[in-house]
Length: 161
Image 1 (tube, rainbow, N blue to C red):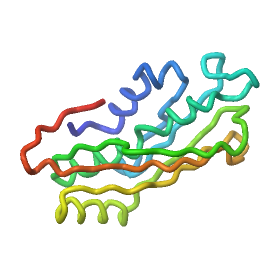
Image 2: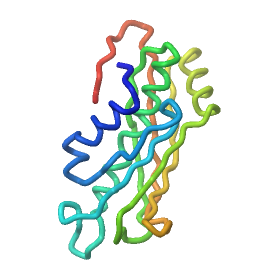
Image 3: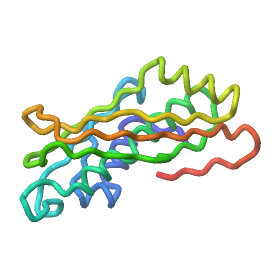
Image 4: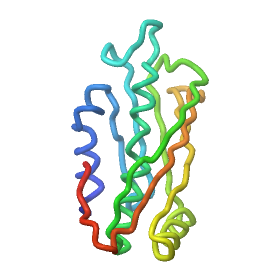
């Protein structure tokens, strides 16, 4: 389903798994080529040593590459199924303040996915993310492997968000 950037921002802000962990979508930009997210430190996501729980950081990174690619490919006329196939995280420093990340999907990334969807019907690739604190200190790095399948062969698309 194609939706507006503002609608998706509010859907994700109010989505209970993100809302209760204080994961807040700040904005989707550039026709879904970019997304900025804030993880607010609170008693709901603080661990015993006073930093943001690692699971919250990991959960925050889960949906966004898939959401961006889903909207981008649909706007190019594809019927697709997009999901996060795998992820890995490296915690570098404790998140003792609010954390932030921005991801961007470049034209090169879109063209690579589109070409694979047209030729082999699926696209799988891992992309990096960097989680920083309010001072710009790198606290975690994440690799998210996105899976995109072209549904032109008859599978019915369903909305997962």
